[in-house]
Image (tube, rainbow, N blue to C red; front, side, top):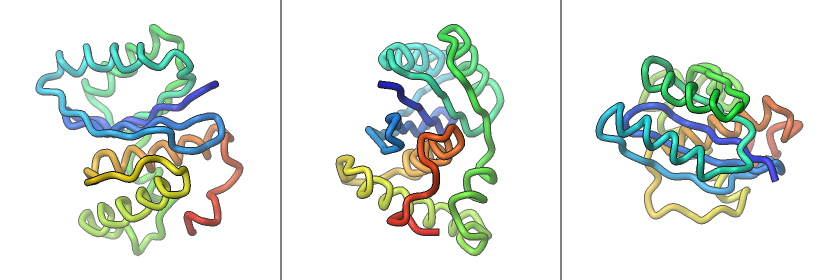
Length: 155
């Protein structure tokens, strides 16, 4: 079965994996102390997902380059986007006018995605994991694994 991995880039990294059915399989937050640890971590994470087809990255710089280089070795389809891209698709303009509002709106929608996907509920949901969930939701819409945003998720 194919999968899509969404990554909210940074040394504090949010990760979300989606299946071909467009539903969230798992999500987590991971802290890498250095760019070197991140490079090794990216190699390991991608190696643990043998059915991975698509990698969606939000962000840029050397951190994105490390993920993209590893994805290239595995011949994965890679999409690099900015937060404005997925926010514009998934959130109303009033929900992301400023950074605190955008973070709150992202967390709220991510919790609805978790419930809709019947993924394990979080004890706490870090903003990087919440954003990775939404980056992945944007990704499955973009690649056509979901035809439209499910009614249960709003918009």
